Length: 336
Image 1 (cartoon, helix red, strand yellow):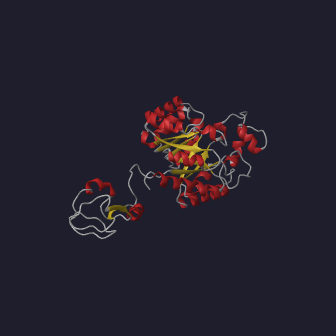
Image 2: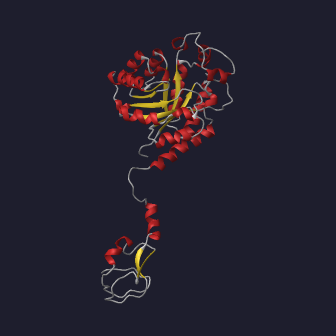
Image 3: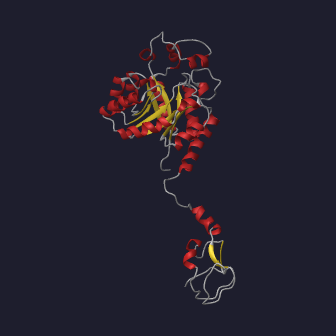
């Protein structure tokens, strides 16, 4: 389908550090019809200081207060884990993405020949990271949660000056709260980004339900990203704001239905409408018997279904003309 929306199934850290669980989530993404699975690649020691506090939603979801370091260390995958998951994704014939959070992790993805890169919202000001990434990435999806339009502009400039073609950059409007309330979404900002930078846009969705994705696609989102989990009841920072398998299948279906709903910019009847039109459009028809030489008038003509004769739009052109033949009641009027 032309203008097909790319759907990214964000596994993130919902594998809980378990490769078997990660493979099950890849299966869910494939079954749903998503285009990509996405993970998070990080070396905890390179990402966060040990005493950095966890976000409020993370503590709530984990039901205890802890540090970001302690959370992430338990969720960190090894280099071999990523090799395994990349291989499994290829086997399942679904695209593989990851968000690197440090330079070593970026280098790992590049060594694995992963050149489609997702940039997480927290890295939008990470200058040396963006500059290095721009040299090697073929396609970039840049999330913009917590950012201003000026910060988005600077990040795009770094990527383009670093060697990226702007056509290969998609800016994902995003709100970094899990879950995001509808009043915080502000989808018009996505359109503002699109207009200001003449760039492809999408939405990274942390809301509950399907409504935001449907609205974003209707507004022209080229990409939709959504967290998935096997169960919201699992312990972890992101499970509660993620979609379970059955809901995610419906979510992707809603996106595909919206694509069909949007159609093209051309106003014209469809094939089905053309068939129906023959039955419900009207023609100019003899209201009573008309003799050859008689003048057509509102007293001997009427407009009735079906289509097939002269269209009623030409009524004024018919009135006053002389009939060239006899017409029976309900017979299509012909001028020749």
